[in-house]
Amino acid sequence: MPGDPLRAKFIAETYLTHAVCVNKVRNMLAYTGLYNGKEVSVMGAGMGIPSMGIYSYELYHFYNVDQIIRIGSAGAIQDDIALNDLVIAMGACTDSNYGYQFGLQGSFAPIADFTLLEKAVCSARTRNLTVQTGNVLSSDMFYNDMENINAPWRKMGILAVDMETAGLYMNAARAGKKALCLLTISDHLYKKEYLNAEERQLGFSNMIELALSLL
Ligand SMILES: O=P(O)(O)O[C@H]1O[C@H](CO)[C@@H](O)[C@H]1O
Ligand SMILES: O=c1cc[nH]c(=O)[nH]1
Image (cartoon, rainbow, N blue to C red; front, side, top):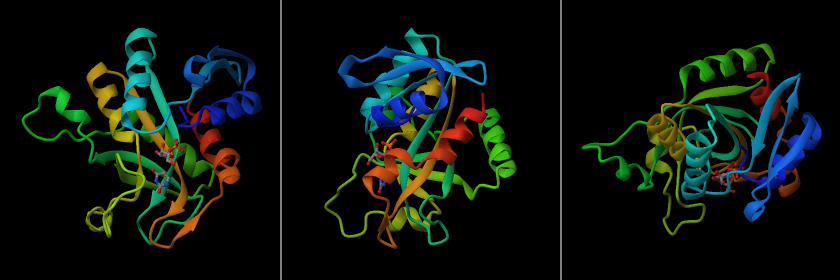
């Protein structure tokens, strides 16, 4: 699941054979096709935990989906991460309220499915990709009104910021299903470096191929 439905279309057209468009509602394009002879679906998730929350809930609970791999973009907040590097989200902190619905007397630690995580790390290694595996932040805010909102997260070793991973991992945990998030660094929030829109939409081939290799 990429965030952008047009990225889902691009993946279906570029990587899948016999791809059929199976959803157009709200333009949240979804396709099912074959990759190396194995059936796979690719679908947009939208932006933010509320959107990912709806789609991943429906996929897990109403469509018998067992595992979801998010492939997204993220903003790096550590100095040793560069544009186009890959981050595998082992865990995801969040400033979102999404987890309150579970009634926990404390905060939940959303984590990736270990089997998917292990496969992704091994596959990335054999592909010689520049990858960091660790903790990310899924924030409700892309723009914010604070001076340096990410500084405390940076001190805690958070690698990068996206807007959905924690919500997906929580839904997977509650459903007893599997999830993993792969993130390509599209922005560096401290170095002030950014990929352009076209690079974001089309330039994520390492991440896409890594995700498909997990099939
Ligand atoms: O590239 P995607 O998957 O959309 O992910 C990132 O990009 C969007 C913000 O530009 C947010 O959805 C964020 O999580
Ligand atoms: O959520 C996101 C995604 C990409 N870049 C950011 O800075 N934040």
